[in-house]
Image (cartoon, rainbow, N blue to C red):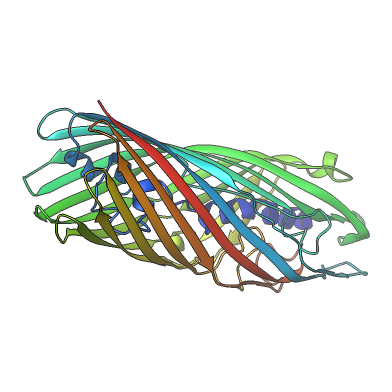
Length: 429
């Protein structure tokens, strides 16, 4: 029974890592950059929100500035033809269950962002940003076929980043910052109730497990901006991995409540991100830009779970590094209006053999557009829109992976897409 409880708890907590480290790393931190599908995000420095990608760009902004914005993210994910086979050792009556169309299992949310910068002198500029870099909600019916793999996943993060930028030469600027990140996760799924006499499970008897945990940890950010000419510049930005230790508890609602509920901790590492960008003004009207990004998901190798009732287990993961490519263009209509457009290719971090119903993401294509309105020398407004078309995703969990033994196999097809609308207000003091 202890072994089964351990596997169940590991399977429950594992989803927290999925929710944080898979396809819900929110790149949407700048309404202006989103209009170009984040092409040139590390080189453009068109307003202070670009400091999220490269703090060195703050040296291009004089005086004191503030930027406040938010992004409405409306993902759609529909599961179809889900088939579960809950063959668990010791279970004399394995269950087979199918679920047809599950409806939309994700929900829209708003991700706010705020930036401030102040030029200290001709060389130094300081800044501060407040962002939500990760976030998601997925919810299934409690009786759907894949309930042992997950019914509810809710993850929220808040990151505060103080930054400093230094203009080393007329061409080269350097920047750095500290990421102070808070994460909270709430997860829920069904479990099979163990039989204390046989070491198997009680036929047809289920319970519901709920996990809550949070943590606060620190990482860093680096950047450089090189202005080859007044019309051409290149940027590079790096956001470090952050090693997290979630602390919380697992509670069960039924027969397992008094026996298996316990405090737990879970170690996981969110990945480092490297981005390289270029920006070029063709003339007074047209500008073009491009971006290359690499996210090092392979740093997430395992998830270790420990509980105050003796639980101690390690779950191996198979994430892979991913690449993000984007190109964009801007057209300055006049001194007040600017139009933006962009296109991007975004890779998924996990294949179908390790994809879970918590995060059924897939490779994606981005189509973006935006508009900027400069009211006067103090006020500037930006709006950006993106439609993300994702490949059809498949979940093919055969029950052989570490942590899946207590949950059984699951096969499901998914259709995913995302609508994103961002807006920001910039004010110069």
